[in-house]
Amino acid sequence: MTQLSKPTETPGAPRHELVLRVLASVGALMAGLSVALAAYAAHAVGAATQASLQSAAWFAFGHGIALAALAPGARRLPGLTGLLAIAVGTLLFSGSLLGAHAFSTPTSAAPFGGGLMMLGWLFWAGDSLRR
Image 1 (cartoon, rainbow, N blue to C red):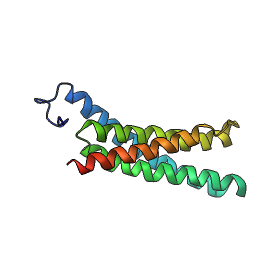
Image 2 (image 1 turned 180 degrees about the horizontal axis):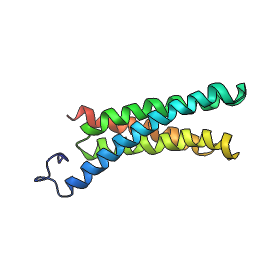
Image 3 (image 1 turned 90 degrees about the vertical axis):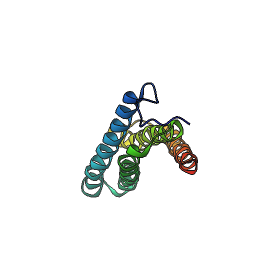
């Protein structure tokens, strides 16, 4: 498959590099904001809500760190697709749990987000085997 890291070989490579930088930045922001969410969950909510918000924080933290670390190494479309799925899935999953607390919205996006995270990791695993 075509490498995304060499602009001379891949049309649109600068755009792909921008996407990779944005993914790494989104990951770092998710990880940082998850620390604030975990602190909020530990100190400002009741026990029933605490578990849900802690789950949202853990998923955002772990996947945010993964995005920040893995994005620079995504050189093919399957890996990039996997990381995008992980990012969107994490935002849907954690955002759904946070939205339920903050805005009393349903958590119906959480299972879809979880499925996207799993699919993203499968794409990343497949792409890793091809390196």
